[in-house]
Length: 332
Image (tube, rainbow, N blue to C red; front, side, top):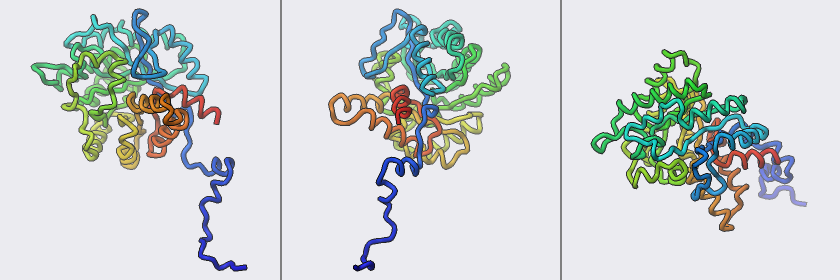
């Protein structure tokens, strides 16, 4: 018998032969507590259906309670709220954003009463409230940075007063993290975390979100490229993140996630703060649409996608598939 063949002593397939041995040596683990569930909210008069986000709907605050209770039972610890604002309330200055009785504020107070265990994250940006659909103030055809930041501070303080669990500024105005942090500290909210959308790219993948939130029709095809990042740039993302940490951000968000795994990896390797990956509406909808066409398995592809975020270094993952993924992970 010839024992001197050319085959190597090391055979990596030995550790892949059985489910138990694969599970035993799995390097990256997904758990329900990794997920943040983005939720669209509406008034009773609003439409629950979202054409471009299969399996996702808009909730009234009352409808949200059983949904959040299910999320908690599955092990999901946090949700993020995004409103569909009545068009009649949208103005050039977005003043509904700091109305203490706006849809988000009402929903936060209602959830805190009925589901006090859930962590509630609120978006800080003006696009749900402006008639032009931009995240900042538009003057003479230009998004003006500093006046926009003033408005964002008013919005942030209003949300803080509702008892929200964390604020997530998504507007991409320069310097807004530092100003919001200072305003919070000076008004008794020094313990309120800021999860900053530090690397938010001007992506083509946001269209379903804009339909769901009602800002797409307001934009009328206008670009957000003057304040959201160029998809071609990576070093710039590192600068944005460094500035936000210096200004007081507690965690950083990379958006989108799937197309920007390199940014997540670099951020995780570079900065000693939690890095969040946002599995955006277009990324989620592509999986859903392909699954509905029979091209792939929704469950397998969703979990593989989310696992990629975690493997790349993400601490938390924002995904519209949070409930589905939590069920799958729990089964496994």
